[in-house]
Length: 244
Length: 232
Ligand SMILES: Nc1ncnc2c1ncn2[C@@H]1O[C@H](COP(=O)(O)OP(=O)(O)OP(=O)(O)O)[C@@H](O)[C@H]1O
Ligand SMILES: [Mg+2]
Image (cartoon, rainbow over all chains, first blue to last red; front, side):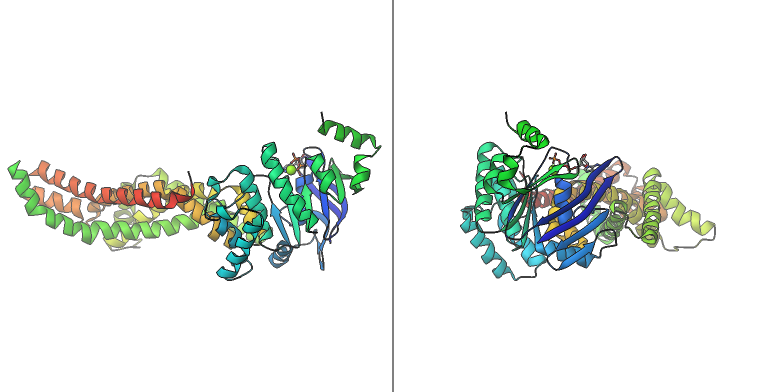
């Protein structure tokens, strides 16, 4: 379980997170939705401390951090061991092949030996039908392939929690569908996922829980069904703006 | 023409030997120290200030020193720097270096380091931020991110401009002649003064420089080809 309490993040001219209290249970898929600039990325990136909130409590399983206190490097690394992240932009290591993108973390961070890491990477590539891409460099892949490899790079770390920030927003609809299918599979396998998405159809189908972030605050936190049939004016307005 | 060939046959071996004994070692040693200096300077200049107040103040001081160093060596002529260190300082009884060699290596290293630090700084900055974050999110320490992700990519980007620096440095070592180092240009001058074949001797020495810089340019070409295998 990941839990945040009274999370605040201030920018000089903006309160990006304004007293956020949330629980992300393990083995569930939670979709974070909300208008552009509302603080979704800031929230997600606070969960693995890529973003440093000014105040609040962050708990991942048995590790609890008071974010207003100094945090040690080893605490940050502990958090990062439990989580893996997929980014909105192309974030594969451009100087490494697909195979080495998948083995870099396991070898350098988890100190696995090369054979073990490669065996696991091959297994993942096989499982997601991408074995033939193993020796290519990122520039030799389509956008959709790059993003699916990025998901595998995260999975190769066997993270307890998978964090995804709009993993499909840079893709064409067809490529988006490829990536979403992968995520749907993962959700079915009880992977613990927190995914920021602008794709409402995907959120509705896949999420066990919806978190609606509105201007730095939690505007809704609960069952997926209820969110999409909410009579809250603000939610209806948001859902209306997302369709046409 | 015949005359020129005779001169070439007579003096080229000596010019080459001198290049191997003076020009090339001077270039190699100064480039080696220059790159180390440049890397340290660049890393200081791009480093983010830590949260700890004292550490931040210390780093800020280093950043100013690094900026002043780069500013000084980029804004003054190499020849003037050589004169200051070899003639100026001893004259003011600041006898840092008695030796012409040490003076030359010091000045050439510092000069190359100043220029190359800008190259390395720009190369480091050109590695996409999101790749660094991806590496951090995998659990890499800052040092691991630098070593595994930033450096390999920055190195590739910096090959053409650093090759330029190396080629310039090789040619600039001719300035060492003014502080009594008998490198190939000095040698050519001495021979020309004795045999009066001024034009021929200077063309010969130009050819020797062109020979070695061309080898560097060819090496650069293959290095670029090898390191660009991961880009279009
Ligand atoms: N470094 C920064 N300095 C100042 N303001 C920032 C900075 N980063 C983000 N913000 C602001 O914080 C707010 C939240 O940003 P965030 O990226 O979390 O939004 P988001 O919900 O992910 O938006 P989007 O859907 O467009 O990705 C925005 O208003 C943004 O302008
Ligand atoms: Mg965002």
